[in-house]
Length: 422
Image (cartoon, rainbow, N blue to C red; front, side):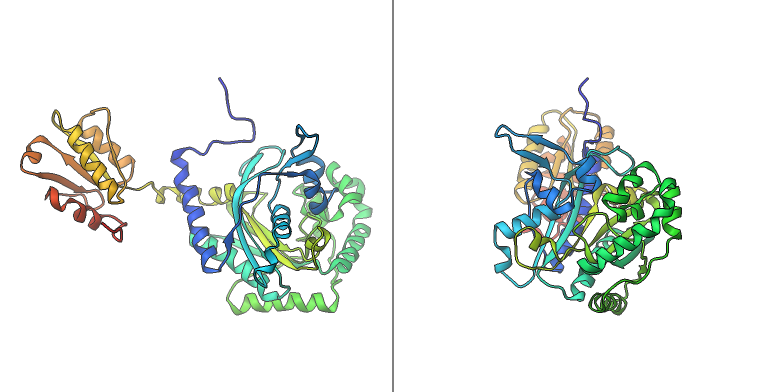
């Protein structure tokens, strides 16, 4: 039997309602903040990610899917979205349209890592990029947007942890200081962190290995920010306090990708286990210039949708697929007439379904319940002769006879879609 590739997963109809709930809730909030959707290709030249993410990162070294196409070009499946969006921003001169370009994305990413809970080789992210301003209030806006999405979804028990890596000079000083601090413990690190020591020492402070975490926690983090970067970080903290967003300053948050500068943050959720980050992001003020553009500051974040699904798992029973009308048919020769009425209701914008297998009425009512139908039209021979049907309100568990000519208005009264124009 053919099966899905390891590290990939089918999103089945029973699960799709939860995905749609997350995506539609996020889209509503993106609109409130005036972020516009961008959709970039899932394949890019591999050099784009090597240049932006950093050749020494685990993503580039171990996880990126790279192949040669028929033109012998080195192509990669995108492992993250920021580099692709910056490429699109520059290629299409999006910065000319307005001072700050606000973009959001939703889509699949690809990394060849060991599949585990909430982490697949094809995974999905939703996120934002705000390009064009170094104002600390833009950092606050991006973080508040992430918090608003979680509140809208009902995600509870989450913590916001923030830090600042400062400018490129500050970051270089932080890297050198961390390398010196870690050196005495080099032999006690896991094999991966021994490699990271020279390639990307900050990744050691991201490691989930218990021994490495203990070493990282024991290393003091000196304040190495210049006055400008320290002032920027203070303004971010003040802005978060003003709008009532709680946070923890955690100097150990470093974000492993090379392009991060200044503000970095993670949102963690206790239901996710050891790898408890549900959202992460920060500033990348140098990336656009490094990729050939002007000196342009930017900030963004990404949610892992699979991780959001896990954090909502215990509440998923509250999110059910909804159907305006289900047709339960009794009596011979009634299906054709029921199908005709169903088609008319669909013309009015009402979602409808019917049993095509002529099951018993009891079985049809079970099907209506499973589909989340708000109303059931019981289509029987006796009622049709009198130009009536029985209409059951599935929420109130009430049933009544309704004239066929009044059926649309009655169903709209039962439906959340009461604003649909007929």
